Each structure stands twice: as structure tokens, then as C-alpha cells.
Image 1 (tube, rainbow, N blue to C red):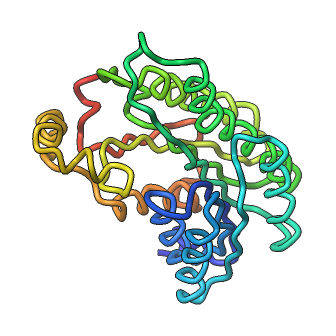
Image 2 (image 1 turned 60 degrees about the horizontal axis):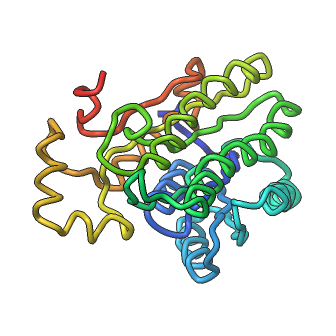
Length: 254
């Protein structure tokens, strides 16, 4: 359908060298977008760029430490200089360290906060300036069910993901009059290189499944549809919302 078509659009996806970020970047390319691939590992970046170019779309890769505001601003400036604009930003870069709250050291707190929350805000700020000026744009923040539902470990991670949901609402309110939409996607467990070992643990997997009405974990392509929807004109009257892509898990927390 034409309303889902992203041809002529330029998207930045952070943390897109592998896993969920890469999957969403490839999905946006399939919908017609050109891509700016942002990650730290050059080999991962270039592999993703090659796969996007194989689809007939344009792509560039920019190695960026998203914990550093100056590198985020340099990345956005390079993207705009190369493509002339940015229409879509997916704030996907993130990480978790599963330390019990009583044992979390300050440096771990800082690393998680900077990677998840600081990067989302300052990437949104840098791209938001451009989108406000061009009077259009869609920002998609990748939160988590942990931002809404309490889980046993990961208090710092959960705090960042809850803050991202609230940030999404606030930025949507601030920038809505400039036709800039800000929404979020909140996944539950998806099989990725980062979760593979956890999900291969039978006891852990069974616990996850027991809390998931659809009785399975997600597959990365199942996040592409929501990302394309929120990036496209199909969601042109939706802003400030979080879509929970979780197999029904968060039903229990509402």
C-alpha cells in the first residue's frame, strides 16, 4: 500500500550493525528508505551497508559512540551533509547488565544510562532540530516492556526504558506543531545475538514463555512491521504512543 511506502525517505538507525537494529534497518530499506547505519564496530556497519545496497537502496555507515553527545552531533551532521535531509530516526542503541540492585556499581549505572537514555535524548535533539526546521519527521524510540512491567533484575535498564516512554510523550508534545511525530516500540524477548545464550537456557526460556500469552519469543522480522508503520504515512495521526510488541506479555502488568 502506498501509505507504507518510504521511497525518497532517509532513515538513521542507531545500533544497527546487528540484531534488532540491523533487522529494522533492512526492513526500512525494503519499504524504500535510504539508510544511515550507526554502530561502533566497523565490520558490522559495512556488512549492513552492503546488504542494504544489495536491495537497491543507498546507505552509508558512520561509526559512533552514542554515549558521547559530540559524536552524535557529528554523525547527524554527516548524515544530513550526505543525503541532504533526515526523515526518520530510530533510537535503537541500548544495552543491559543484569546486576541485582544492591550490587550495581556507579560505573555500571553511568554506562547503562548513557547508552540507553542519554543517546536517545541527544540523538532526538540533534535530528529534532533538523526535523522541526523541515516541518516533518518521525522519531521511533526502542523502549522495552521493562519500562512498564517490573522484572526481577535490571533496575537501571528498566529505569532507562521507562524514562524513554515518558520522553517519547514529552517530545511528541513539544514538536507536534512542527509535524514531527515521536513514538516508541516496546519489545519483550526477541531472539538476537545478545539474547541467544539466555534463551538457550531451558529454565529461563520456560519462564519467559510462561509469561507470554502467545507462548513463544519474538523474531526480528516481527519488529519490522511496527517500525515501518510508525515511520510511514500510515501512522500520520499517531504521536506520543508506545506500541508493545510482546506476544501479550504486558497484559499482566496493565
